[in-house]
Image 1 (tube, rainbow, N blue to C red):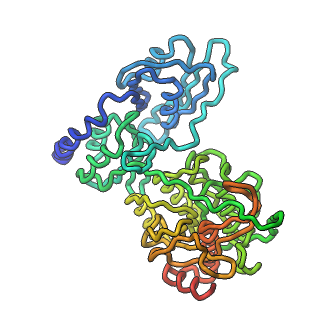
Image 2 (image 1 turned 180 degrees about the vertical axis):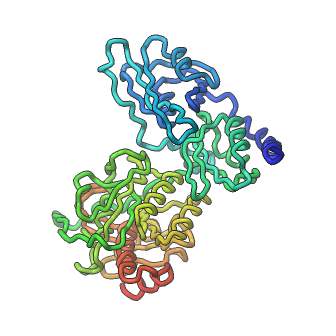
Image 3 (image 1 turned 30 degrees about the horizontal axis):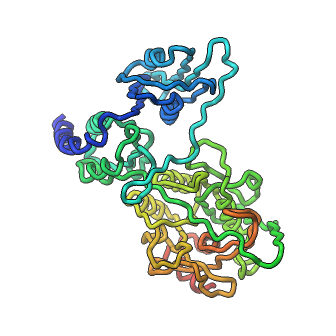
Length: 467
C-alpha cells in the first residue's frame, strides 16, 4: 500500500501539467467491464461507435441511423447508457462468458442498433482502415489521440489505473515483451504535450505519441522507348528456405495464393483480410521472393525466399510506431529471420528503436531503405545501429544518382526493376532504394540458408564479397 500511495503522490505533480491539455474533452468514450463513460458534445453516433469498436465490441447497425449525440455520464451500465442516448431506435446487447476473467464474468461482445421491425437493414459497422494522422506544430505527424507508454516495474496496476482515470484515457492494447501500452486519450487531446509532461514519471520509461511515417514510393515507370510486357517468372523458393517478412502496403489478392507466400497479416487492422491498394507491398514481395529480379542481376542469383506479406501501411501510405511493433511481433512469432523495410523517415522514435533492438535480439536481421533523395541526412529505421541501411545501384553497378548516402548506408544493391504491378503509376520500370532493399533482404536470406548462425557483421561482409 505504501508503494502505491507514494507513486500516486509522485504522479500528482505531473497531472497538474496534463490537466490543461486533457480537460473538457469534446469526446470521451470508455467501456470497462460493461460500464460506459461518455462525454460528448454534438458528436455523430458513428464517431462514438468507432471508439467502442476499438474495445473489442462487434457492432451491427442500420446505416441510416447516425444522430448527433450530446451526453455526459460516468461509469454507467452500458444498457442504461444506451437507453439514454438511443431514444428513437432499438438496440440489443450480446454477451459472452470470458474464461480469462474471475468466475467467467460475461463481457459485451456485440451491439446491434436498428429500427423496430427492420432488423434486416443492419450491416456490420466497419472501422476506418486508415490511421487518423494529424500534424503537430513542429511538423511531426502522429496518430490522433493515441499515446504510447513504455512502463517500468515501478508502475503498479493501482498507480496506472489512477493515471488513466486522471487522463480520462482508455487502455486499448499492449505489447508485453517491451512493456508498451497503447492508450486512447480524450478526443482532441494535445498528445505531444501530454507525452512531454509524462516523461520521467516514476514507472514510465518512455512516453510518445504514436508517431506516423509516410511511405516513400520508388520513382514510377521510367520511359524505355518501348512497351513493356512484364511476365512473372515461374521460379519459386523452396519451402524450407529462410522466411523474409515484407513490412509494406500488403499483397494484392491475385498473388495471395502464390507458392512463395508463407503467410500474411494486416498490422493496421488486425483480423482483416490483407490486400494492397497501393501496390508497393506487392512489388517488394515479388522481389524478395525471387519472382522478379532487378535489372543487372543474374537470373539464378540468388535463390528466392518465402515471404510473410505484412500490411504495415494503410491505403493513404502511412504507418505508425505501434503498427510497426505489431508487424515485428507477427514476424517474430511466425518464423521470419529477415525483415524488409522498403521505406524511411527522418522522424525517429525511441519506442520503434526498442522494437527494432528486440527483433534483433530474437535473431532477426533487418534491412531498410536509405531513401530516394541524395541529402546525406540519416533516415530511420535504416540509421538505427542494428539495421542494415541499403542504397541503390544502376544495372551496371554504379551508384544511382537519386540514392541517399551517408555513414548509415551499410551496403548497396541493384535498384531498378521491371515490375508487373504499379505503385504510383502503371506496371513498368521502377527505380529506388525500396527495390534495392527487398533484393538485399533476399540476399540476406540466401546467406542464412547456408549459415543460419550468421550475425549482422558476417552478413555485411558476405554482401560486400558478392556484388
